[in-house]
Image (cartoon, rainbow, N blue to C red; front, side, top):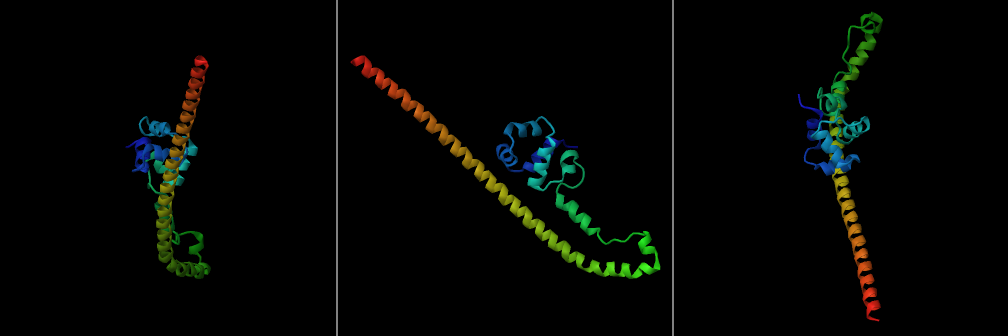
Amino acid sequence: MLGIGNRIREVRGKLTQKEFALLLGITQRAVVNYEVHGRTPKKKILEAICEQFNISEQWLVTGEGSMYQEERYLKNVRHVGHFSDNAETQHPENTSLVEKKASDMSDIPKLQQEIIELLKEKNLLLSENAELRIQIGRKEMQIYMLEQEIKNLKEALKGSANLHRAALGSAG
């Protein structure tokens, strides 16, 4: 069975480790530790991965069950309305209740389809969100690099001003 590092790598997909780290608010080194060294993220990070990428926490930690949360949700929805042999359905006075439940089930396929469509839309929005976060991260990196360049230029200007003053001082 694949380890948690491989599952995290699978969730990351085509994102770089740096982009993945930016989305989660962690360092790239942390992603390397998870993927390469098999370290298990703290609960907060596990929850962030699951929330951000709609992943089942059980699958992420153990590799068991469905990878995506909506599959588990849809599985539960499909079982709504199945009747068991409990006391409620065994008594004759409850037959009208059972019939009412059966008639209410006719809307379930329509509701399931609506849920599927909403989940697809959610996944699309999550993808767009991830792309925007990556773009923001890149812009933040550009800003940082420009700030560093400005800082270096200011230091270079100070140095050349000091040299100029020193040259004028020795000439006079």
